Image 1 (cartoon, helix red, strand yellow):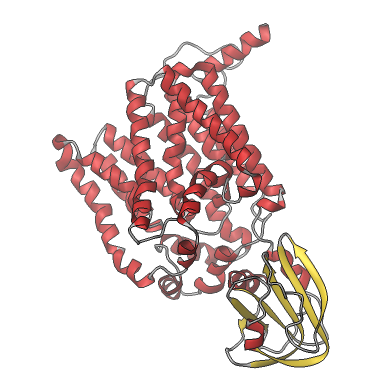
Image 2: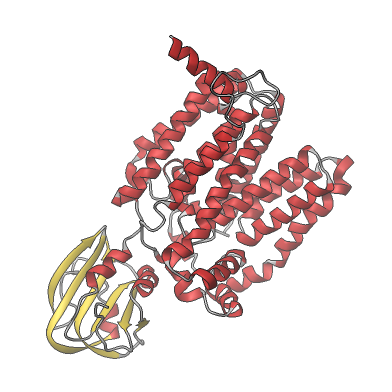
Length: 519
């Protein structure tokens, strides 16, 4: 009983606010910010300790292979011609790569930093949304805790793309909005204008999250004159990005329309519950975590939210709804760019909404226990993604290790187009075989994934035989060899890609007719 009493005492201390009674003996020496420090440290461990565990996949490898150049001007030109994202992240990663290079850890490091910094921002959002009441510290702990361990946030914190920076800047814009809404001082309005503009420059979908914030700030006539410039600045930035959007023309978004809209809508909550790669875990795990979250929200609503927390929960709900429903409405109207990963920043206000409800003062210890179980479930999925091959990125690094062997003659590599960038990153120098040309080789390496075409094991040309069949974490490698060099055309190779219904690319090492040897 003494132990139970002690736990209750510590729990009361963990949820106390400045001005509350003194903390229990043995706990008083801990500073008030220790939970935030612990959660930020946990976030850093989860992100940095396994930063190089998984290999680059197509999107990540595309940046160093095709976008980054020694010149910033050339890099920005590449952003216009090959990307579908605003320029901020590319400017950051270009400057970073000039100092630290284009190694895998180097390119992922800024995303990991952004992911860690999102945790204290989430803490502050939780406090603001809870309305400054005595439950605000509890909401801050839960919000920061869920952001630190959520598998979706951890995943993008370990990816060399713009998403982690987008999440950080979007969360910062939301925090500045909440503070400006509470007290519209010039400094707070400038902070909102700046953070909102930077968030827009990191990802176009930020506009859908800013729309409700801007309208909310402008709703009060008494302060409209003061808030109008703060809203006008990101609006002007957004309009300035329109020519870039038109110039980019939706590069690389064709896969979105090929993915059924109903499946994409289903995947949005699945991404949040079990991460980007969590589908193989099955619906049972998703449902279990969803029920825990639902129970926490229901408990908070049943016990009753204080007026400030109720207002904060409503604000978070409106921001989440706009962040998802506006692009959904656009997709239904024919402008279909809705992909689950494009709405990742909307998951921050969703997390804050959950935190405000679960950690409401009336939920007591039950609410905090539910929050802890939800966080542990997220943490388990996050850890599983680092050790379960089914949940990891495609292992192109492993493929290269398998085919990087000495050969007495030249080779050619065929693969579906989404594998070309990582292969070029891990196995340089490679270049595309010219359309209509012919090359003379002794080995043909065909790389793909399931489902395979029915005749995948049949040699692509006479004189070759299947020498090896490898399964590298669901990437399939067929090695066809010939005892003597044989001429084979690009058209023949293109028509024999082993992955069913996929566009193929043909890559030649070196200057074209050279083998790839171990270094």
